[in-house]
Length: 360
Image (tube, rainbow, N blue to C red; front, side):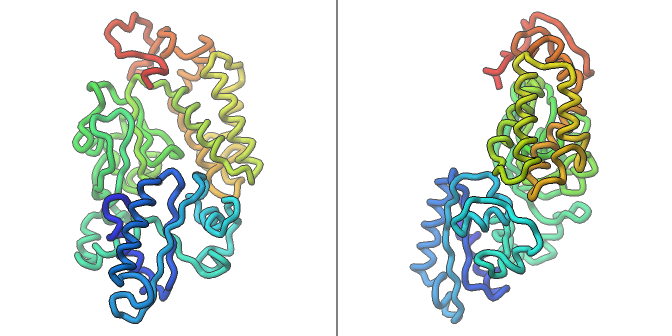
């Protein structure tokens, strides 16, 4: 949207002509001010050049594009909540069926795609389907935008074939871990997916590859954490996000996300109680499809709040226990740290980087 908006607009026009639609909307979350500004300018340029409007490039076809800025709700990434917001109401997800392709915006059949998807369309037409399918891992074809953040030397947005491994992405493309630290864990597909340990570095970063490794590609928002990160702190931070972004429509998600954060917050701040970890597991479950939240809300945000909790508990149960036992975070008060063998080590931290929450 910010660097190649005309490619996106071309993909939208082709899509509209293919499905005989005259009206398209680009829904942009409120925080993405620069993206909205750039896209609106590009749309205005296309109207001035006769590429949009009553007679697209003399074809006799009409295509109009409206750029719409949301109010900033994460939940409006869910397609039915997006449509509700676009109609001017609070962004609540809806039960399906009916699906948007049958009854969507204003009750009309509506096709919803990510802007990354429609931007691929002109390139596929120009280069051919065989070119697109040449980047293939099992059923995953084409290129994918990876947004890599966290403790890598070169964070950024990278377009790569879905044949690359996590190791190639982190160490070859992103230059490795900052200060040459040890890798602790990877969140490969956005904050909602299960975490992966360094032993999964050779997993292929495709939908099938990451699923086989125990996680998901999801939104391809990859977060990389080095050994200075406290997993309890990281999970508490994620749970605060989902508590805040729950729309509140469903009781399991509204109450469950609040309880997850409340328990994690007190564990991280030295007020953990015996039974807290079992309570977290009973709320979040032991994996996708279990617990008090998963599968019990209208949309997937409840699951998204629960999956990281289940995953972190499975991987770092000892560190959670130590937080409760020692009344706080050893990363902050320098009582201990966990090495790659899963052993808690006491030392002076004389040769370690700055620890504690300020370092995060």
